[in-house]
Amino acid sequence: MTREEFADILLPDVQHTRAYYEEKYGKRDLPFNAMVTRLAPSPTGFVHIGSLYQAIGAQKLAHQSSGVCFLRIEDTDHKREVENGIEQIISSLKTYDVQFDEGPLCDGEDVGNYGPYIQSKRKDIYQAFVKDLLIKDLAYPSFLTEEEKEAITLRQKEIKSRIGYFGPWALEERNMTMEEAVEKVKKGIPYVIRLRSHGNFLKRVEVEDAIKGKISIPENDMDIVLLKQDGIPTYHLAHVIDDTLMHTTHVTRGDEWISSLPIHIELFHVLGFEPPKYAHLATIQKEEDGKKRKISKRKDPEANVMYYIEKGIPVKAVELYLMTLLNSNFEEWYLENPKKDINEFTLDFSKMSTSGALFDMEKLLNISKNYLSTLSAEEVYQNTLAWAKVYDLSFATLLEKEKEVAIRTLDIERNTEKPRKDFAMYSEVKQNIWYMFKECFEKPENYEWQKITDKEEIKKILDIYIAKYYDIRDDNEEWFNKVKLLCDELGYASNMKDYKKNPENYKGNVADVSTVIRVALTTSSRTPNLKDIMEILGKEEIERRINLL
Ligand code: GLU
Image (cartoon, rainbow, N blue to C red; front, side, top):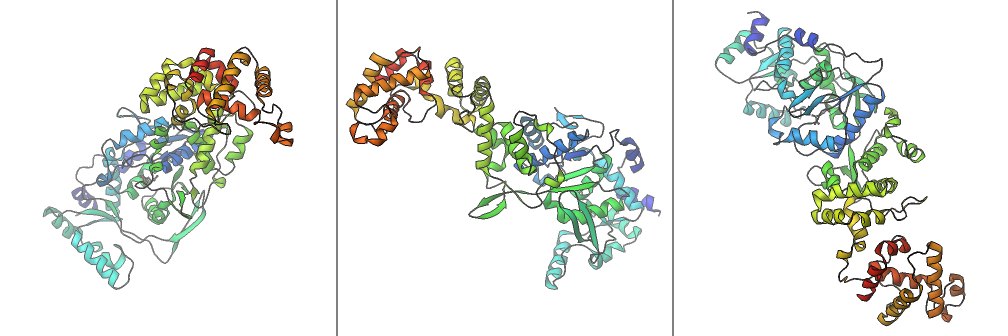
């Protein structure tokens, strides 16, 4: 029996040769030094914030070098797959505006010349390469049952050996003749195809990682599974073939893969491929009770990229924040260039964290507040409305009905040197502006009165103020002068310096009086410019509110 015949028996359905695929997926026509990067998620549930972090990094690295970034779905592990997992990945990344050039991007169709981009559709490709390895005796069939594997593991534990299928433990199957193997196949005994490893655990493989620098780990000597019993490849084999045929120049992936690197390097060599550059990104961690740990898919709601969308944290703010995690000098650049497109910033491997990237929600919310303060009132209105249409329908209806009031309110102290930063998410807009809408201000229960709490006094201040002093046409200065006149009339200090010198001479001061007006009209003691609020409410509404007291 020739090795070709042997390989045919083991993998009878393979349509093409490896040469066919190598020719089909020829070199990309790209400028020198252009990076080809990818995101290669598995459809195992929601998109993790760490995947978005990787996606943003991969996309920027490719595009800043006039290269290509593609999406590849790694669905070779059916046990972990969830329903609609692929759609979830595509739509979540689209929500975040991640720009892939190639991949399964629209309704079941691939974009790009290096597809299919879903691994389950590439079975023939993987098998063609494994067949070649079988012919070269670099792979062999393994008929081990679960029980036999467990027995080996047990024995290895007993004698404190390394765990796995390698060297002496694999001898019997490694030495099996082709005829013996074929006999088992003919009997219908299931088999996997394993790598015949030539690695030596006592030697080290050294890889120059673009982020972590020199990585040195013992060589792989495990006869790892290449094709499972159903002919589907393992991640190890699939990504090595895909990244080669898709001409990935830089594999940017989570650093949890570093421990598998020796397997991957051996696979590249065995297959006769040139390994790409690896750039292992630090895992996103959070601090809890003074300890750092990975953001967990099960425990932390913020692990899910859709969490931010539900809260109404702008996509752009999340992107800005992840950029600060990706490159230590991004924040400084952005502060200096707040108006510039993020794409003008050059991501640099040398500025990436080599250990954990610590996720700080407070910082993200601050970035979000700053970002929202740079938008126009109309933009904030439209974005809040779009958010509310999905997550708070009654607020959406109100916003549509009261568009003018909403926009005028959102515009208060916006186009100033120090714009207000009242909210970090669209879900916080309602609690900040609800009092501006007549229909929300029916019978407020909680007024945040401060110094002046006596009902009679409050009424007196407001009645005199409205009857004698308030004029909607006043500008800021005039408006404040009138409040001061009111203070003089009622025995409150209109001048803070005077008040501080002799507080006993006064009932209170101008701040106390304006707080009374503010709280009466909004219930809140902290609002944007009161004069602007009053102008938007109008005299009739102001009077109505005073009469509610
Ligand atoms: N499918 C792998 C994962 O979801 C991707 C690893 C890689 O980027 O190569 O973790």
